[in-house]
Image (cartoon, rainbow, N blue to C red; front, top):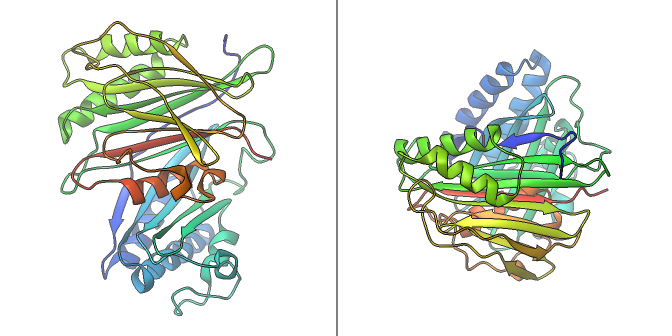
Length: 351
């Protein structure tokens, strides 16, 4: 496909705040700092502080365990503050009731998730009763509107989390959309797991992400070869590159190392194969695989910081949600704290 136009998106620096007695104050402070950094006016910062405090207070009051992730995302030249809340239960039996204005999950602020949804330009939530909830609230700078609203752009989002005790993560991801002259839209996405963890693993990931951004718009094989050349002399990485073409109903993929990749449709998933090796050190003879991709399917790539034993049937309703919620719920339910973790999710635009 000869790219005509599109957009790029990649992993951002994430502020992770684990559940403790001070999480609400810390979340409010970090959210205000990030909102001011992207030029939010004072009244908008106050709304964001209220929404983030409510989400944090709900964790304090109800969750067995959980965390908030705060980050700045940039899409189509627009910046937004993004909040993700993830917990391990007890979940919500009736999400609709919790979204009613004036109903507070904590019984303290009295604003509830309905106000969070009203303040946010993008809002989504998924809950598994007895297991946990993932919540997304995205607050756009400028006029607050979603630049993707009403478009047929494919949606991409990911999430990374460092191993406990580390500040940086060796897992990373990046994606770009490509619009062909015939109007077809495809997403090329990379998931990278820098070997080990800590600063050296993170450096390998940063080099891979920069090379993906600047590299060829060729087949996934061409992209992996370019990343291999760039990562020579580094610690090396496991990498999968996939191109999801929802218009033509196919995904092409090339993977080296232990990145898990799946096409999810309904309660079933198809595994995308990867070859043994280390990008930057030991590159095997690369192969390009093709797998059918229904328009309603979802493409998921993740590192071995998530168990690959999850099943779509264990997550009823999840894969109809926004990619950021899918990524957060999978990381929360399948992630392991003894390793860096990263996941990226791609789906076609939904009306």
